Image (cartoon, rainbow, N blue to C red):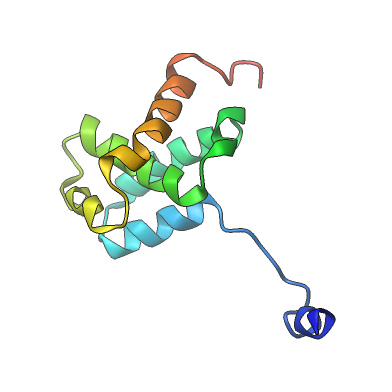
Length: 110
């Protein structure tokens, strides 16, 4: 049965990344290109960070946009992030991890 399913799918299995979730969120909330690229930057930072392994891609995408919402004035569309099934407490640790990755220069060896 499994082999038939894999042949039907042409063995094209994938795992969604934080950037794919980010694209979806940006599209739903009609965000600007600038918002997308700033969020994408944070998602890409986390994609090479060891500390990001404990977070799901959707949590990383929502956290990166929520950080943008807190630190910038150009994100009015993102005030609706609470409409997703994430609350402030559920992504607080992920946001701290993103912040620590940026501030501690964890990626300086790359």
